[in-house]
Amino acid sequence: MNTKPAEPTKKIKVWDLPLRLFHWLLLIAVAAAFITIWAQSARNLHMLAGYCVLALLLFRLVWGFIGGYHARFFNFVKGPTGVLTYLGTLRAGMHDPTKTGHNALGALSVLAMLLSLLFQAVSGLFNHDDDLNEGPLRKFVSDSVADKIHDAHEINQWIILALIVLHIGAIVFYRFVKKDNLITPMITGSKALPADSSTESATGGNVLLGAIVFAVAAGVVWYVVTRF
Ligand code: HEM
Ligand code: HEM
Image 1 (cartoon, rainbow, N blue to C red):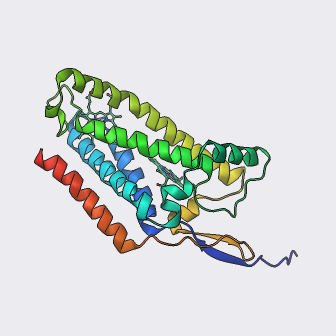
Image 2 (cartoon, rainbow, N blue to C red; image 1 turned 60 degrees about the horizontal axis):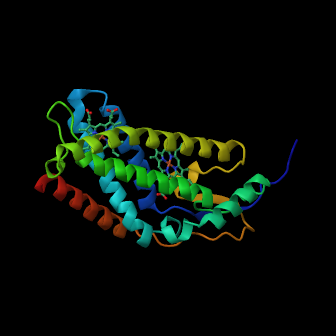
Image 3 (tube, rainbow, N blue to C red; image 1 turned 90 degrees about the horizontal axis):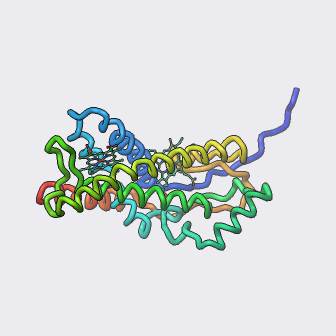
């Protein structure tokens, strides 16, 4: 019988609760925006899902400056040298699963997802269909600008879908090829590492502060949607 003792581990905090809630709510809202577009009668629900995406993204923008350590843009956005260095370590088979937070390459896809979703949600505010449904800001742009925005809203959906496929593909790659489970920390907030690992728990990410920032973000979207 194999009696090899289990290696002692310690739990390291990775993602704060507001960031995790942001992630899973974003997934639900984006999925809802894509599903509801299939039924003409559900256009109001599509717009509602879009407003939720917008509020979540406004929250994330602010959280990128005052959130937990790994949520802060300055702590994960690296220049081209950082990305090339990380690519080199990945190719050399030296990915280190005890490192936490976004790696330099993942950071690029995170930014691309956030920006393309922001573009989609904002362009939606000016969008319209042939059935009298229109975003709350449609009346502020001319017909020709509205048509261009309409086309951009349609084309950008493919960029978003491609980024989501890439995102899920990367997570599966790390899980099965690099033996690094990224999903559990995004659910529980923490990761079990060998007890002698030098990686430290992420600090910051106060839940009350997160709730306040989200309430303000939702208020701003609500104001734009109802007042104009
Ligand atoms: C509509 C679909 C999805 C969208 C738009 C999305 C978006 C994002 C974004 C924006 C981040 C960065 C978090 C941040 O710092 O703001 C992220 C990270 C992450 N997502 Fe998703 N996600 C989606 C689906 C999924 C699914 C289905 C899974 C799991 C199977 C998943 C697992 C993760 C994990 C594990 C991370 C952290 C990656 C890391 O450790 O660097 N996501 N996602
Ligand atoms: C990130 C959030 C959003 C996503 C992922 C999204 C996605 C989509 C998609 C995939 C379509 C179908 C395009 C086509 O193939 O014709 C569409 C159409 C539309 N969207 Fe959005 N959208 C979002 C936000 C919004 C918002 C906030 C509004 C308005 C307040 C909006 C208003 C519309 C309208 C009116 C159409 C119909 C255009 C037509 O029938 O030609 N969207 N959206």
